[in-house]
Image (tube, rainbow, N blue to C red):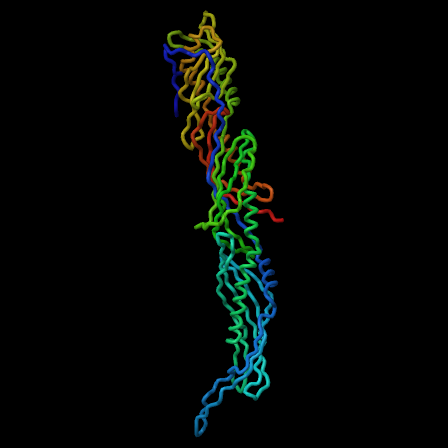
Length: 480
C-alpha cells in the first residue's frame, strides 16, 4: 500500500496566488473490434412446400419395344442340350411421386421423395399379352449446402433410394425385374431436382434477411443509463460465413458480422451511416466476440463531502507542526476538480492558530495524482503538492500546517477510493442492459464473460477507471 508522507514544498519555492487551472478534457472514447454472430434462420418446411410446387407429380413414363425380358438359357434334356430363345417384350410404365419432405441434422439436408412405379411387360414373346408389376421406393437426397461470396447458394448431393419391392413380373417361372429401367429414369429425375434445389434455396431469401440485419446493426445500444450515461456505437464493416446447422426442422446460417464498437460517454450518439451489404468471406470457425470499454467514475462532487467530513473529524485534536508545536485548525469549504497533467486539485479553506496567537486563514490549493494497480479497483492518491494559496492572512502558518504529516495523511486517506462497490453495481447494470436489447426490428443479445480494469485517470469530469469487457453477442431479426 502506498503511504503519503509529507506534502512536497521547498522552503524557498514560491507559491502561486491562484487556484490551479481547471481541466476540461472529457472521458476518452474507446474503439474495439467485435465479431457479432448473425444467425439467419429458415424453416425447412417452406423448402419442402417449394419443392412440391416445383416438381410434377408424374415423374416419368416409359414405352420401350423389343426389350429383353427373359435371356436365352441352355436346358439339359434326356438325350440333348436345348437352348431356349431370348424372350423379348415391350415395357411400358409410369412413375409418380408422393409428398416431398425436407429434414436434416448437423450439416446434412435430406430431401425425401416417396415414389410409386407401375410397370408392364406387353407382348411377351408373342405368348402373353401383358403382365403388370407395381413397386414403391423412397429416394433420399443428402445435400451439403454452400454460399458463394456473392450469396449464390449451391448444393452438392449424394443420392440413395431403396425399392420396397423392385418392379417385376413372373413369366414361365422366371422373375423379370425392371429395376434397371427405372434406375435410368430416376437419374434424370434426380438431375432435375439438383437443378431445382439452388433456385428453391435462393427463395429462402437469406441474402435479403442478412441485408436487413446488416442495415439495422448500424446503431448504438445503451450500456449504462446514468452516472454517467454510456453508449456502445456499432459500425459493421465485414461479414463472414461459417457454415450452417440444421436442428429440429430449422436451417441456421452462421454469419459473423465484424464491427467496430466505440464506447461513448454522454448523450446518445447518432447512428453511423449504413453501407451496402458486403461480399461474403470464409470464416474458419464460428465466432462471436464482443469487446467494449466502460468507465467507472467518481464524480468530484462526491469526493468533496467525504474529505470535508474527514477533516472535521481530524480537527478535534491539534496538529503537531515541527518548530511551532500544537496548532488547532478549523476547516470550511472543500473544492475538488480535475486539473492539468492527470491530477486533481483540492482547495481547503481553513483557519489555524497556535494557543494565544491570532489565527491565520485562507485557502490552500493542493494537487495530487490518483494511482492504482492494473486490474485493481483500490485507488490511492500520491504526489500531494501545494500549488497555490489565495485569500490568506498568515500564509506561513497555513503552509507549515499543510506540510504536516497529520494533514497530508488525512487528505490522502479520505480521497483514497475503493471502487469495488461501484464496479460491482456497474457490472450488474451492463449485464442487464446487454442481455437483450431491442433496436427496431432486431434484438441484440450479449453475455459478459470477463471484465478487467485499467489504470485510473483524472479528467475534467471526474476520476475515471477504465473497465474492459469481453463477451459474446448476436443479432437476431424479429419475426414479422
